[in-house]
Length: 230
Image (tube, rainbow, N blue to C red):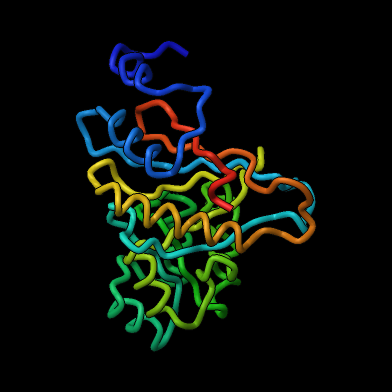
């Protein structure tokens, strides 16, 4: 893949063979975020899990203390009193059956997270083919299938993120923006790592955190010394 001059220049400040301490990695990743917009800083965590086995799956959610720096749009599937509750909590869109054709036929996807009360999952299930591939299906493990829509919406708005293994057993999640202070990024990163280590499946043997890399949207990645994270 051909890289631009800015990327090549930024990459010179990183030794690709070195695994940096957390603090130094965060300092470096801020320096190599040189795009004209406020880049997202992502953590890419390779685990020792084999996602082909159900008992080695990882999926959960955690509220980052300083949020992600992104305004998140929340859609809630609810009925009755829960509609007003969701709106009062700050949900951007609330509805039920009437949203099905809008999403299925019109391709409406103006939301980042979907929350549903358990009694609405029969409705939401009809959207599996649309929401599933985009990682938008509500899930009890992520706290997005719940009767407590107030807590769900407020947590998401406050910076709750979902983490899960992809097909290559890597977890990709944002930990903030390049404009965050090093302390804010460090707090968010440590909160994420603590949650993932706690979620380690008992079936996983050997080294759990195989590699951890921080990278801005447009810049090179910085490897972190995993031995100091456990």
